[in-house]
Length: 609
Ligand code: AGP
Image (tube, rainbow, N blue to C red; front, side, top):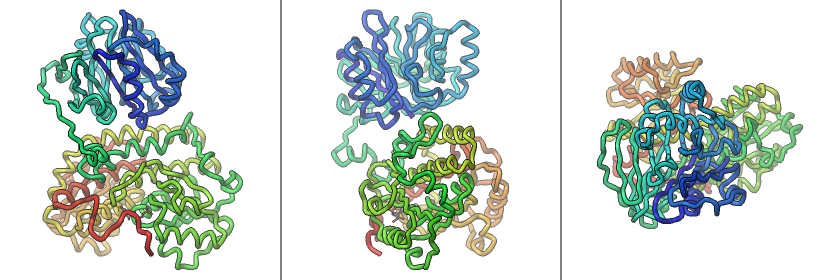
């Protein structure tokens, strides 16, 4: 996930882009770069580091010119180096581009372009786009870009400028978000609205496979085949509360959409150069951690569901025995704790009374306590020996969403950290798992931009009073989480079950009024069994909604509705699979005329026992 700002108008582009790009920093902090065109010259300044660090490293004053593009990077292809920072150019530095997304077929394109004599400077996927445009350039940057786009497979938000045509800024989008800001005598491109709201409240949301040509006083939009499209700007009339919700109707929806950012912030600084860096977070020495022979995870509600996913991760990868306990139960049992026991507490608020009491009991019994908390300086954080923070930002909606997926990411980070210490995984395997993890923000962003199917499915629940969510393995906790989300914001009685458990009683509930969500992502373990469970429900006229891996045609034949999620490791798929279930709960609640931010009987933090 990266951030893009582009400008064309009467102002000096560089200082404006620096200021606007800082409001996108959550999208990427590996490196940043700026390009302007002035007096027939392409001027580029870029370096590694956060935007304010780069600002101090480069010669910003040299960047004259009223047209420019800029970028803050979240590395997916190519290490974090100055050469790999955006913008990238063609061979002769006449065409410059910035990109957010992943060009899936970049290797083949790069090979073809090198054979044609193109010289590459970076190891990024993005640079192939600049050389492809160069290949097609015949004094028309719009046409050359359009032709280049025809070859691209994957996701992109692009900004393109050319020294030959300094009066044009080209934008194009497929999957990765890109908006156009319409000003007076100036126009903007940006990865999201807040970055340019200071300059204009007239916004055009580019859609997939669309291009735009921005001039100072004109914006024209076409599809990638060149067909003109009329798109009226949307006026962003956010009052202060809406601005606080970034234009979303409810905090819950805003926070669901903030998850790519929350995960990116939670990962920031912890997965550099193919290794896990938790040294600043974890106070336990390597020797102390190596003595851990058993982990007990205590939590409540959604955080307890995260704990169940963590159990799967830790046992599967770090080979550490794990027990998961409701905090409210743990504190009244007589738990067996010895010097080899590590107690992990998970809590978004860090104030949940039962969880706080549980860690006090654990400490009383001399256990080491590590907490995974979102609220800095909260009681649970303060009373733990060590804290691994999620950096999801404040979570206002009562239903926990971005904190949940951020908790899963932290559990995965800790799992890899422990796996490395205990040599339960090779360095190469850990590097591969980290690379997949770093792609999550981008995959989640793509997932969030097609919720039309979820809205359609939500209509099924309008007249329903009961619902089931079924999963196996690492997806069983996600089934529980989907049921809790639906319960707590729509008041429909929903239950999560291990799919195999249905035949031991619950299948008696199935009839044509029972919508059943299956977590049916592809894996080597239980996928075929899940397909069998789907058939069992269909045979009894149940309504089947299946969360599937993109491209899965088999489940499509069996289910009434399928919601695809991007392909990733089985163990990471649960993080992506949670998102459609959160959206489903949200839209069902809104369809039923309820306020998902303030569900009846609930509070955001349960500070009573
Ligand atoms: C989650 O959607 C609920 N609001 C609730 O179950 C919550 O997860 C639980 O109360 C635990 O809160 P905590 O994570 O702040 O400790």
